[in-house]
Image (cartoon, rainbow over all chains, first blue to last red; front, side):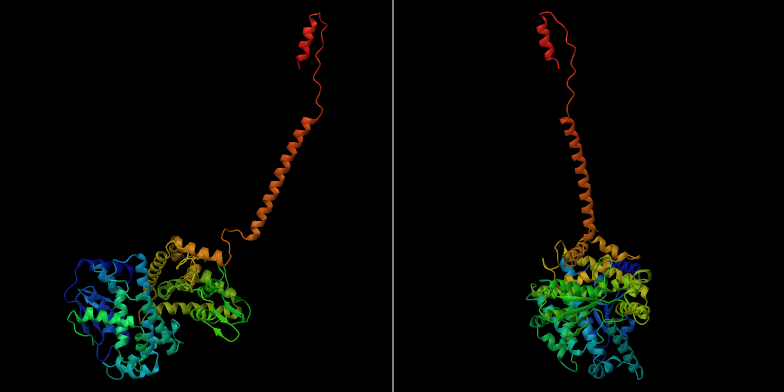
Length: 263
Length: 312
């Protein structure tokens, strides 16, 4: 969106309170959604729970195409549609709810830096694993991605998406990486997150912020998704404070609110 | 460390040891950690590769990307992060990710995609560093690679328009610069008084943006308003790369001193001359006082005579 359009949207956003029928769209949970998309969607859900804003999750096969930026998840609030965690956080802030107001400038800089670290390393590693690792692609990704569509559309869409992701990997220099190097990067990232978290309950001590939501989304999905091999989740399991962190957020924000366990 | 470490990278200009961000990161890290690097600047001959610069070669290894080169140097015990705590190490990784995601697209755009800048500054400079036929191909390829990277990471499939992302990437870059400035505050380096990996990365990304003279300079203007970041770059340049910033090279300083000396000598000579003249005047035989004609006087003359003698 251009800058003018964005300013206009936030003006309008500020005017109305959060409606009861806000919905979040993602792909079909059981058959279609992939690791990276699930992580992103869970991060947004966690963020909205932390802000105490009600949201209904709706699964649609064409969620990716409905989204204004091509990425899931996106939320439909009033008559606006906003996609991806960053813009959603800003949109929610325009409506007057924010988790990071209590942080000072240096802490905000740190929070943004760590969010970029998660996006840069964890998300890219997930994408690599899903689309560039032949074993996973063959067994899981192709089948899942095209599942709602009839033959031959399912194959065509899956190959097209794979080609796009491989182009992106090559542009940022991950094209030549082997799976082991990618797993090592994931390990480094988890180590950094674990060291930053230390023994605190959340990353910025007492209150959760969008960083906590993002980290929870990714780590929980990695821990609970079954892939061809368990190496990715093993890397995360090495860090016990991260496991405790995920469990804590799950209990506090998802079970206690009566939403039941996350599947 | 017996084996010599050789780094081949792009050369310097505008007061910088290298104009290429990644090469600068490696050079800065080597200076900070005390690694003895022999720097081979890519020049106009056919020797050496120009592909994945910067490249570190030792006797048995060839290491290519900045992150890998830094890892290699650390394994060879040239570690600039020795005194950092675990949390600071984690912060380093996070801030480097921030730089790569938010600042790098705009830097690439300023150097390689913005047509005024590219055709008047970047392309001629790089073309002058490469031998003839390649100089027609390589800059173009680097420019296309930069555009690709920006579009694929920020653009929206399937059409990937540049217009939409330009405003966004510059806004992100300005925000990133503000965040870095807030984090640096008034301290000399990012983690205390000794420079570390993060300082090398920030310096590598900021210094070319700060020093290279471009026609279209909105990001540079923004950077210049953040005086602590500018001071940070200048400090590193003057202490680690020994490039003086007063505008005078050491040779220039000497000529000024020589001139000053000559002027002083002249002035001294003048004043000596004046003193001599003064002395001469004083010591030269003075004319005797003019004798007034004596008057023949009466016995009252004696008193008059005494009066006369008293008169000068």
